[in-house]
Amino acid sequence: MIMVEGLDVTFGHGPSAVHAVKNASFTVAPGEAFGIVGESGSGKSTVLRALAGLNPAWTGSIVVAGEAQPPHRRRAFFKQVQMVFQDPYGSLHPRHTVDRILSEPVAIHGLGQSDRRIERALLEVGLGPAFRFRYPHQLSGGQRQRVAIARALILEPRILLLDEPTSALDVSVQAEVLNLLVRLRRERALTYVLVTHNLSVIAHMCGRLAVMNAGRIVEEMTVAQLRAATPREAYTRQLLRASLGYDRRAADQFETYD
Image 1 (cartoon, rainbow, N blue to C red):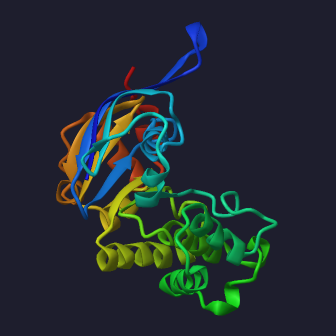
Image 2 (cartoon, rainbow, N blue to C red):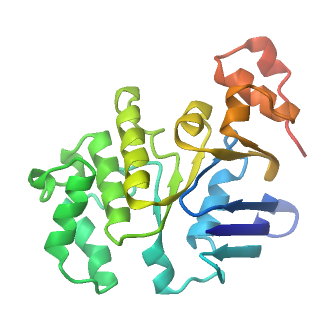
């Protein structure tokens, strides 16, 4: 479903340029949930934004559903690939009701039957019709993220790109949103690319993952290998230790790639 080869992303020019992603390559099968994990600044969200067509400044090759993607995507691309962002409050227009937020993509793509699509999308994410005419500030963080997921689903895409979809939520609602995403992938046969720094989220959601450090993919592994704590790379072992809780001695020894 997704093939990325030799992806490079650089921001800026000259001595101040930042080489955010360096020669990244991976594939994602249809219906698979693939994770990208790494510490903050490792380049994982930059990969997702290049995939989503939000950042056209990249080189390499991106193929989605057998079709090579140019830096500037055609409208049809956004019907089959949608993204859910980290901060649900920041990604929803504060002066638009849920109804307007969900009806906008339907209108842009000329799909019709807006009322039926909105009602179905809200029900699928566990929100009833009572939420349809509320504003984002009238919703909890978990409810806002459900609206963001409904907005992504309303176009009936084949691929969801998930950028830290639960990191801005209270711990008590993170599991609810993750379980919702697991159910939706199963029911709709969706393909996921999930970016997170949380290895337990990857273990719950994904079958395979790539580990990024300083813009590079340093290792690919299965979740079974992750659970068995048998990574090949020293950096991945450091991430595993860090996920168990703060250790001052381990933090002092933490290494990154150039």
